[in-house]
Image 1 (cartoon, rainbow, N blue to C red):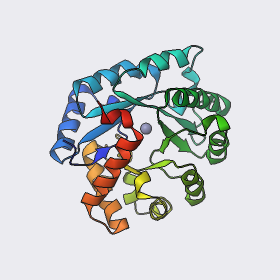
Image 2: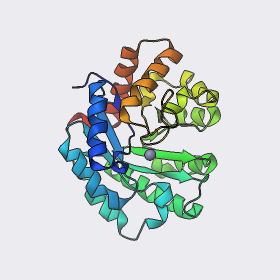
Image 3: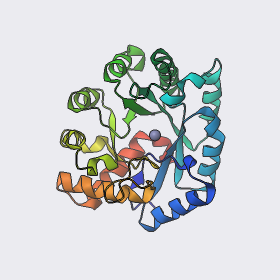
Image 4: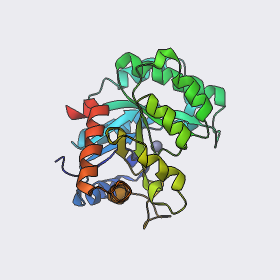
Length: 260
Ligand SMILES: [Zn+2]
């Protein structure tokens, strides 16, 4: 079933087993037709892949989140390359830079990001990117000619208008999350108007960032509907149109998902 929206970023691996199945069923009942689960660290990969293999409508990204960048070891590029051979692994990630929390040293974050992007270019896979308070360094890496062909989803984008303009010039995709429903999020919403529809994705970032009216509660993939509704409102189009162009974006970017 590919009728409803796809939650392009939900960390279902953070939920308990029964909670996770419930969350999937609750979302499907509201018409959600697909789920992309980004790994946080390589030790997640087997669990995340097993989840994907139990469900036709679940795919994953495999990689190392910037918070866990210090776990990256010599040989992990080979380990990740082997994991990405799985047909359900449709992207590299979640990778990126987080200079807000600084859970790993910044130079380590950048090195781990570069190692993963090299692999994405080599394997011709897209990347799921987390970027927080690190625009300058991120743009520096992105400008490296080695990454000229990189295809990226800047998930739950909140990097501001100038950053969005530059990423658009690099042909990047933008993941819109429950943040677009937050009262004080005009800086996130103003990016909507300048983003081409064929570069828009919708996501929940489960279990974080629950949209209004669930704000403050644990987020669930079912609530991607609230993101779709708000996006439709901002663009003055129907929710069906939003679902159509965000699903097109999803299968264009995550092309491996279209065949598995
Ligand atoms: Zn994430």
